[in-house]
Image (cartoon, rainbow, N blue to C red; front, side):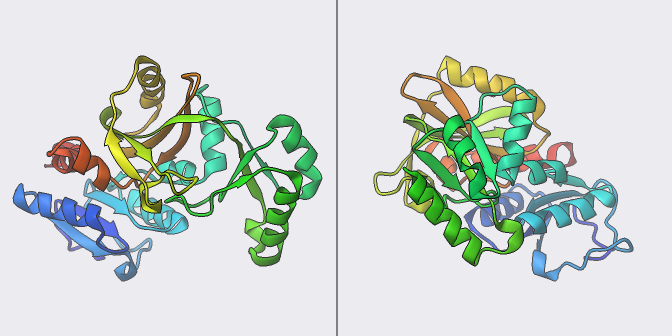
Length: 285
């Protein structure tokens, strides 16, 4: 990427999935100038620059990769969607929980442990069954139900044998009896789409794991939680995963800073991609 790029907006990704193709095609049809750059073609550094105010949509696949790209672009005074701090916090589940707790938002109780010595504390605080998740990751990968100390120890043995040293920790959530698994798209602090995710063949309900979606009308309790959350989010597009338990309590499970929206676009409103695009580039359109 060089300083002679005068594009109105830039989309940086690790490939062209449905979402990236749709954003580019929608921009073309709407007469909005947008350039696509593959992250593998980037050579960012202090002497590389873009015109200040260039809008950049960061949709790179890797957590650390996304942080590096967003940080470099913010250093060039670009308008980065989503900003580095949001990618950093919401891309790591333990950091998301700390952020939610700081803002007194309802989240699922969790623990991160670095040794079996802490298993007694986990059992006391969370009980069984537990949900084991990778701290960094998405699309429902690596999610497992843990029903006993034996299974917890088996997970630890596998991790300590095969994982790099800096990944030798377990992130564990208290399991809840889920009535509704929701994906809510929040654009510039406003709700634009809600679907319920269902999957009879997998513990994880993610669309990427073979789940399907249906349109969902938010109730007053779910809306109240989102109303509490939204003011704390920056401008940008976020996929908020809500779990509603059988008692009607709403929990924030995750916040996705680079959300997929194909299923939401198919099920909710025909102009969703256009709304996302124009909302992300804002007054620069």
